Image (tube, rainbow, N blue to C red; front, side, top):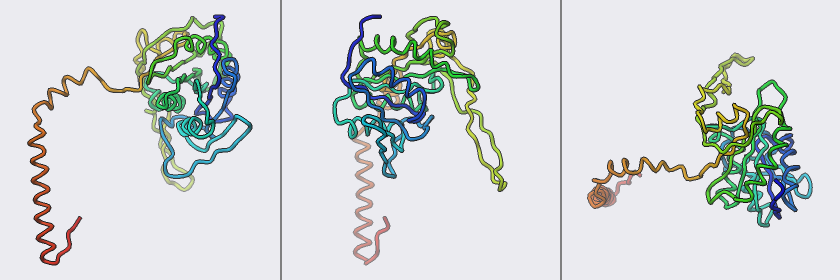
Length: 290
């Protein structure tokens, strides 16, 4: 594909940490699409952080170079700080990844990589999350992501996703020459974290590891899981609106006979009783229990 849209400014982030090889690769790829590439990523690995914000302590921002920053927080923190505090100029695109490991099916609800893209989407900036599938003990095939990510990004920039939509891209665990192609897919179904391993520490106190064993994967034809398992690059649009619209009519019928007038009367009666009790207690010099 020869046509390539050129942007002014791209933010690159991840959940594996600011020193992760996938982040460095994605930064290099991003330079082919923008005049400025900014990197704002977690100081340490935050895999599985989900869409979490740090609210009960201050965040430290460490400047590594002119456009490179490390944040001692979550991927969501990084995107929020980057877009609203660090860069201080409009950002055209956020790229999150390239994750060490796939983000397929229900992984998206746990993934810090996806969460970073979600935060960008909520802030009105188009976002793409990218992940490289791999097996635990095998070398990661970064060359596959390096080969196909530029093509995927270039095509997505020709028709950016709509409002409240991010794109989840997964590269299969095969060499670039063995990739079957690029498939647009729907989200499959698989659950991570079902392997709970209990052990004892040197003091004899128990602790638990949450492992990565997955339940049986129910991908099926047309899913991201099936595509990546078959050697395809999967491209999945994810919508931020999680409303299950098919359930609205049923739920509506369940609650259609609820009278707001009668509910308001019940609230008023409770309020009247409390007022009477308060007045009586005050008149007798007593204290009112809250």
